[in-house]
View (spheres, helix red, strand yellow):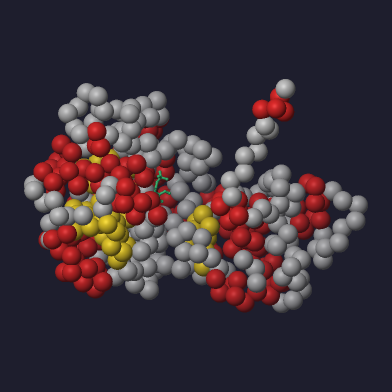
Length: 391
Ligand SMILES: Cc1ncc(COP(=O)(O)O)c(C=O)c1O
């Protein structure tokens, strides 16, 4: 229970794997295989745990490239400590070959770390230990009712198969583990957060948890089916279905019209939505994960907004609006930009603020319009007044 984030869980799990290999005298195993589709934390955790990362390629359909995996395994067999794999993948697909992938790593003595960030597509349906996982962290802040985002607390308990249990982090003072096994100085991590998850599990019950998973999967597939003709869904499984999330590919739209994924994300605020994940895991795309907690009405409203936005994009494509001056590029519309005596845009103020009418849903009123996000990420600016200001 110690790790306070998924990434800390990865770190804890990899430390357990490392200590396990060392306990068997297998001290040369320092390589961690990670598919190119993985979340950035996977490679960072491996590096922090003292492992070297070997990237495994993905096929065009987004799945792990089995040929490349087998080639890397053959090349590095005795050095492989672990494979980290996300299931369902960050591409939102249940990979058909996951059991074979895990078995291939086990065959050469490696351990399999299943990144459990997508556990809300598995709970009640599948057991990571059965398809080959040795370790997994569970992002309670994604699957088990802990708020995520807006600075919400992360919690990433780690589950292991029994052979790894002795190597899990313990209490930094009470246990006899070496110091480097400690991931947090609190033995039970965010102990005050855990009762929420406990209560959620107790109240949902096994059947309820399974239903939540099925609802999340049904919702994602519903979004994928409704939106595919407007924004192609990038990856699907063999049967044309997605898992609990779908990636909407805007890259061809951007190429043809100049409207970017940022424009669409910002425009969603005018329609009353916070944008879904942008440009992860694929740049220029949106990844939609409705989860089990959004009602059909909410999912439908989101699809309606996205379809209406596509019609706006087409107006830019057809030259009705220029790429520089249209409701997408100017989004989000703030009160300040709308409350002006003189309005000089080729669309109305009503179209800007209430594109689907006032009855659709409340517009989000951000205090600022566009900021240079990339610049901001690289140039942290302290906005606190200097101490002298309080004198
Ligand atoms: C696939 C995957 N792995 C790992 C993580 C890391 O989890 P955390 O943000 O709790 O560190 C995330 C988080 O978004 C994720 O999506």
